[in-house]
Length: 88
Image 1 (spheres, rainbow, N blue to C red):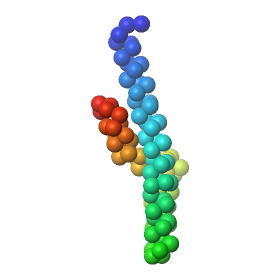
Image 2: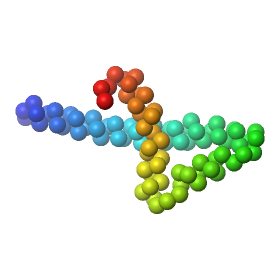
Image 3: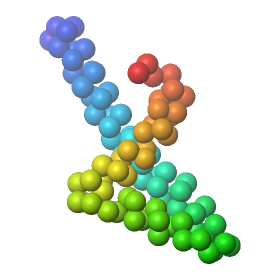
Image 4: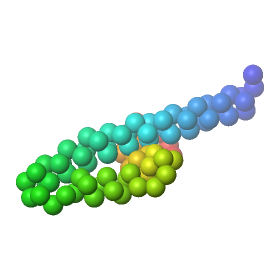
């Protein structure tokens, strides 16, 4: 195996890893970071923020729902990669 083939495999595996981690961070940001504070604000003030968030994220086709939730993970993924000293 030559160096060029190794570099292609390494970059492809790094790209797949970043896409996977973006999905993990999106679930964390939507369900833990956003849902719990919004639920508390809803409970205190009664302004229906959780239902507004659900209407935004869960509207459209099934593929668009997953994509919108995945997009929510991009900021945390970039912060996490910068903390790990990855070059993007």
